[in-house]
Image (cartoon, rainbow, N blue to C red; front, side, top):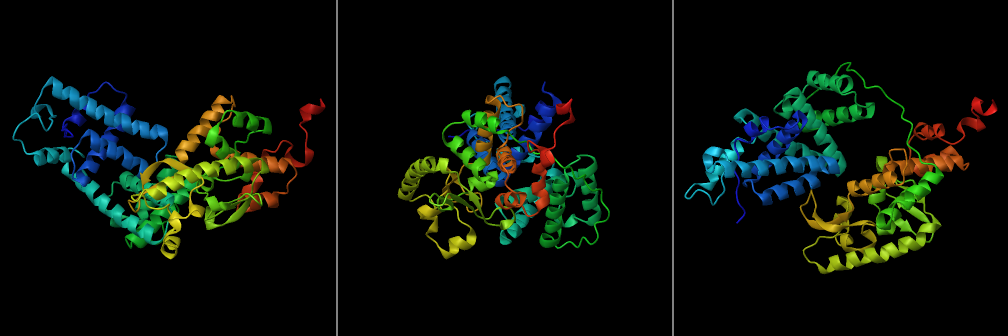
Length: 449
């Protein structure tokens, strides 16, 4: 039987623990979140529930590896200290007990004690419960509007941060003054990029007006974040060769395809089998940024490797067809309704399927999804370090390098704009700053001394 753990004095123990202040604050947030999650699920704290909670955070939040590890550290501390408390002073008085330690005690009362300590006080617990109800309504509205899962998570993240920073309990308390104060805070205190501030503004206005029917009116003259023009990180052709040499297997093929076609990482991961045209050497990018489709070039050097990869991928597909418990691959809602069996059609399978079966965060169905962005990003970053490059290499550096190398080879900027899927030519012009010979063959004056 999975042992139910109680540790109501965890906050007191954590406060006196010999840990850096930053760690104590991080652990406190994670443990409160975990205990609140247990309360909402109606389950006790146990090793199994902790594992389920971590799985939930991965599916719902899609955290980076270092963030997920911080959450795990907080949970590990909770269980480690709970065990130490039990072994030091057994019984309920110590703040820890197992279901086997005290005969005749009502387990439901124990779980209720843990729930009360999830947020330390009734006011905070009520705030979290109300917030959970509001978030459910927000999520329902966003899904009714057909927003992408990434957009859902982004909007909820901005909403949670806004409510926490402004000390509000319910979404209907949102108003123009509070929103203006929050936007000022983002610009002046956190110094976020203008794109981040705009995204927060769009998210909060949509939630206030469309979900809670709050009439914001004129938000006022809030402080605008400075728009900074960033020079993209670009690898030279020699550095690109060294980078590829540091990769192997599936990740090498993924990186080569991203560089060859100039894809965003989301576009790369969402490719389906039918999006690769090996006869015409083309990649069909569907529903790219702004919901636009486009055609990207496919290198002839990758045709044989992709054919081999498709043969391996087909084995996953055939195994999944034999498993009656698995739903077909995820499809857009409209397509899934129109073609109910398309999810089990080879043409619609992910080009980069995950090795693991996962639960769909929306429907709850078990199916095979594509590789998670963090897994690929980690492999790319590690390869950049192993190649000895003195630049911070991310997957987007491959897209930047694609554009820059085309310009250096004499391709006109309008063509590059179309290949990248940029709406405005100004976005593409940033690559003119990093080509090997800026301007029209301008040489540095030092060369002529």
